[in-house]
Image (cartoon, rainbow, N blue to C red):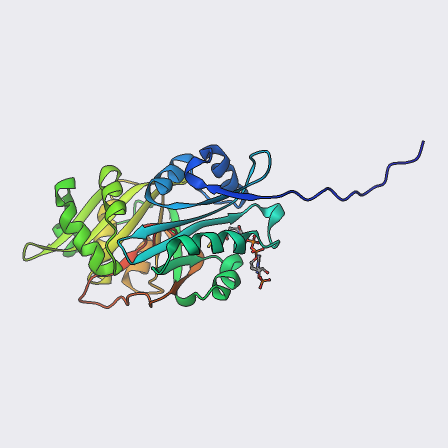
Length: 295
Ligand SMILES: CC(C)(COP(=O)(O)OP(=O)(O)OC[C@H]1O[C@@H](n2cnc3c(N)ncnc32)[C@H](O)[C@@H]1OP(=O)(O)O)[C@@H](O)C(=O)NCCC(=O)NCCS
């Protein structure tokens, strides 16, 4: 009997795209676990309720990739959950799925947050770098004290305040995010800051991944953003909390550091069709992201 060879080439298989809404959430969860992302099945469900996309499926229904887009109003969309299973990376699958969803996005201006692995792909598809995102996370520490002055002004907002929150969010983000606002209003803790009765800052907190995420945070300055975050961190001693911000240094980052939310990783925000709105003191700006996929 001849000895079997030590190596063999397996026949390559074919992938087809399928509407991500029809795919088993556990298979999507397995896909994101495979690239060490923290999403729980519930996080996938929340994202699927907000957006559209494709999954790459083989002949027997196994999931090897995903790419999603999230419309925000008529003219803007964010892109996220772009994953190719590690074994199949660098074979063109990422580009193939991106081309499929870019066609679905049409003429909308686009925003995404790119990992290092995906950067070349996005630049080759016409995206331009805008800013770095600092992913800050950790176990909240008891030292997290509210900033003096502003802390007392922070108030708890209710679903009835949603219209005001949504208007402020649109002013900071640069587009209306009605679906996102409605979904978060059902599940998130919301804090606000008013000036002469007018809402000038808000922040939300919800369950995500390993623990809790604080975002979006929209405010007119870093101190205001820090005060909102401090209010949402109160009583969370020891709990795992994450916040993604584009502030490189300054009062918000110093506050996060003191509260146990240290820099864990960075991604880069890229846009296609229009630049990212700038964040300037005195006008509404995004100080905390809703999620990498939602900006
Ligand atoms: C990013 C990712 C989706 C790319 O998927 P993919 O199927 O490997 O992509 P493709 O094979 O279509 O490659 C697209 C381009 O990216 C390049 N590329 C792929 N992986 C890369 C890596 N790890 N580092 C640098 N470049 C890489 C390829 O060379 C290719 O460029 P080219 O067409 O000029 O040769 C995949 O690496 C992945 O899932 N990574 C983990 C999750 C992640 O970071 N997702 C991106 C979220 S923004």
